[in-house]
Amino acid sequence: MDLLVVGSGFFGLTIAERVANELDLKVVVIDRRDHIGGNAYSEAEPETGIEVHRYGAHLFHTSNPSVWEYVNRFTTFTNYVHKVYTNHGGEIFPLPFNLHTINQFFRSAHGPASARELIAEQASELTPGEAANLEEKAISLIGRPLYEAFVRDYTAKQWQTDPTELPAEVISRLPVRYTYDNRYFNDTWEGLPTDGYTAWIERMADHPNIEVRLSTDFFDESQPLNKAALVGRVPIIYTGPIDRYFDFAEGELGWRTLDFEQEVLPTGDYQGTTVMNYADSEVPYTRIHEFRHFHPERDDYPTDKTVIMREFSRFAERGDEPYYPVNTPEDRARLLAYRELGKAEEGVFFGGRLGTYQYLDMHMAIGSALSMYENKLKPALGTDA
Ligand code: FDA
Image (cartoon, rainbow, N blue to C red; front, top):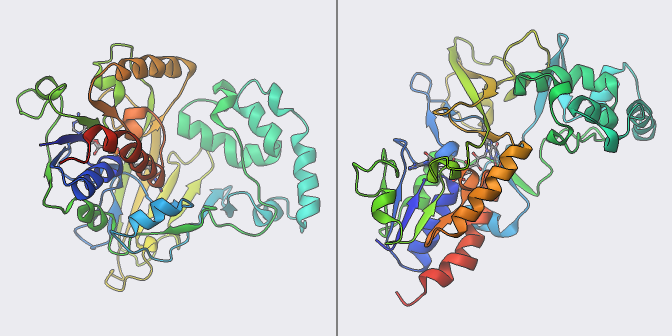
């Protein structure tokens, strides 16, 4: 083995693929889960065959030409365009905030200029720089009426915390579009892998130089590919949680996690769209995903059954899946301390969303793996193999 990769998510697999393919070196990829692909993993729900994203809905989008070129080596993409709606007060509104949302909410017919004036006037109640908490920051960006309807209760559910007790920095912007465009992403390319995430991910790992070992934990000393046995002996890419690597020596980094409640319903279509947010506090979940709508082009899905997934959000405890960094000032201080420890760890490269304690979209995880490969690994591993 020339390289050990800990974690078979997009970061780890991109590195493994490049090193195996371009440098012709032997790579072993381990993952403590019983499947590859990290959080992008998807599988067919057994009763319906509908592709379900086990760790929450994953939509691919990017404006990075090198990433787009790279991912197209392994999969084609459908022409799916992501759109999100929200249920507030028994009415359905389109998101992100756009002219349709504004006019429906205010029962008005504003054009772009007068809508802009309206929101600016409502937001003038507070100045962004002086906001003492998330509530004040949001009001300073979009005004009180839109905040109270669409942001306050949803944010409280996401964080289990009243927005007046959340730091203003949790949101930097709340985009408002003064057009009727409600495409969720602004990127040049978007779509879903035509034959699913798992088929894409498996093609990345399908190389004679790559060996994948599942249900293998890097910290389990009863198996041979563990930290104590290998650090300093073979180069390692580590994409697990950075605090766990150092045995939480500087304290635990805070994460939010999600609980998913999946259900097969006896109807061909439950909500008519992929994602419906629930903005109000009376509904305990934040959103419902209906997976059949991610692939309207598939004609083998049943017409009398559908799969939905309700999403609930809460702070993670040790043992929960870490999903979104909380990023308090204490977390940031701890992260800096871990980064220093990481620099001193000879031959170990920390990457991916858990290894760097950052929310990364898939294209960002892949892009940062490609640049780590070019800038650090290729020079370190050499091309004399
Ligand atoms: P990832 O978490 O995928 O992989 C890390 C792997 O390391 C895991 O498989 C884990 O089991 C393994 N591991 C950890 N510790 C280990 C140990 N001790 N030993 C062995 N293995 C270990 N992005 C996007 O572009 N569009 C989207 O719509 C979404 N949606 C989305 C929803 C939700 C709920 C989340 C949380 C995230 C998204 N994402 C997303 C982000 C996407 O999931 C993310 O970009 C990738 O998972 C990043 O890949 P990584 O390889 O960095 O981590």
